[in-house]
Image (cartoon, rainbow, N blue to C red):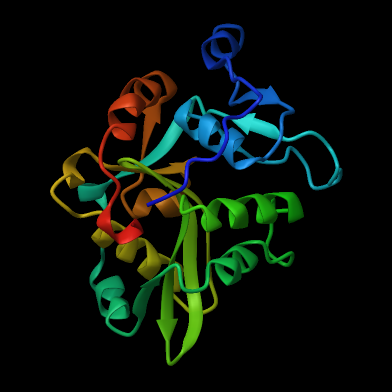
Length: 227
């Protein structure tokens, strides 16, 4: 079972922020302590630096106007992807730090995972809230994803691959891990949709609808796969 950290000394007034603006960015500042991160997810927010130009700048907190989400029964698995799945082994939480480092590879375009983010999610992982789903082949980590599991919500943070289709295989593995008796009510949050994610079944949900559903998601039991 995950360990509940001390509560955050910060409070996110999401309703006020949304009322006074229609932007995805709703707050700046605060810290990345475990209690702050969990409070943010429970309010429908997630952290992401505004720019890598200022690594010491304030943290930004986001609540997309149009949220990218993947219903558990909505994943589209092509025949080629199904074949690819047979050549990988799915593991959970056996190489969390390596998955984060793969996602943070500075050679990747639009990288945003800095040392602050890395340290914060490693701490959250140690407490049992952040998890990695990994695609292994021949004893080598070829791809994976990581995110935060709270109740029926899996808030995906990032994914990477070293071999073709490995990150997509990890996503298939995640959906299978979430496919329990509560699967119809669970949700994978991918933050923003992209054409690539849309091809896998990700759709957009309005911020209002996402926030309205959030309390029901948080009340669900955690998936057995994540303890």
